Length: 448
Ligand SMILES: Cc1cc2nc3c(=O)[nH]c(=O)nc-3n(C[C@H](O)[C@H](O)[C@H](O)COP(=O)(O)OP(=O)(O)OC[C@H]3O[C@@H](n4cnc5c(N)ncnc54)[C@H](O)[C@@H]3O)c2cc1C
Image (tube, rainbow, N blue to C red; front, side, top):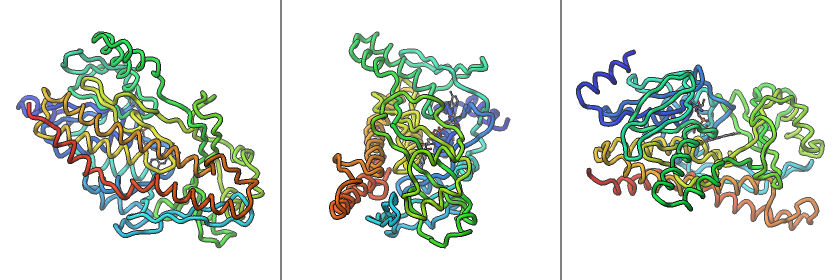
């Protein structure tokens, strides 16, 4: 009520420069609202389809690049309270790469990063984001966007929800995840615009590739295992596969990926995520050959969640008129580098800084969105490609090399090569900053 009153008062006083509607109250949407908080001339409404904020999944990791954004948004202290790892700028050992599909498993590579992968329980992470929402931001629950419409030459955007209600805004931010309704509308709209402006080939390109969502050929089984359970009959402290602690080390987050390259790009039959019986997991590989620690972990898995990993591949644009995509709606990537949410947070911050800049007004808005698209689209699409590459390396797909039948020395040499490749694909997470590209982007904003 207070926020509605605030929005109304601002509008009356003529101090509102932009009315932003965020579709989706996941990590990207919440982060965007938090990032806009410092701009008192921007009002924010979040429209979320769920009846309450309900994060899916288990653990989540943040690399230094995204962590620095959270700190810039003033959340560092609160987030540090719920992470299992101490934030630092020093060089740390962040991952061991281990060959575990044999009884005498061994570490073949170690990855060091400047600053650690900070790990969180996803619900706690999202809770901190929600706590940092400004009081002026209003969340409308149970509002599933059906479609939006806007004039070809500007004017407000009209939002239509599945419950029959409507709303208007100056900027629509599509933060509605991989099955984004905003994205569907935006691509349809782009195709129409192309048709009107006599660019049928562009229209065709956009329409032909309309379904940019593709199955990565990979299934992730994810589970949280209380550490106490792991200690019961095993005293080995070394954690491997994709395993990391969350909830201050009380619980271990385990993700087991089953990658079938031949299925990449095929339609996935069945729901994309569901809880399954642990017996399904044991059918995918002959784990009896694996090293004991892995078998021990698997023994403690109860009711894992099965995720068919889908990605959004190379959208031709993230913007259309006054609508813009962030996060998974724009570039959902495979989770192999733990960067999807981090990229959503980066988008959220980047866009907020462009919208909040005094040079961005209703008149210059299209230009500011173009700058966003120009900088964020190539960056996020390259990051997605890197995550896909690592997914292949993690499952020992490289150069057609046959790891099962090659001699031991050749295997070790190939594993060392893989280590270098994996680190090379990953190091952008701690060797680059968002600020670098944001500075360049801001310099391209023009006065009205
Ligand atoms: C197995 C797995 C492991 C992962 N691990 C990591 C990790 O360690 N680190 C990391 O950074 N990332 C990780 N990710 C990726 C990360 O989960 C996503 O990139 C991130 O959640 C994207 O945030 P988002 O806000 O863009 O979308 P989402 O989190 O999907 O949020 C979208 C929101 O929009 C709402 N919504 C949907 N449709 C509508 C509609 N029509 N109208 C209104 N609201 C709507 C949804 O209810 C939801 O609240 C992982 C992903 C998977 C699958």
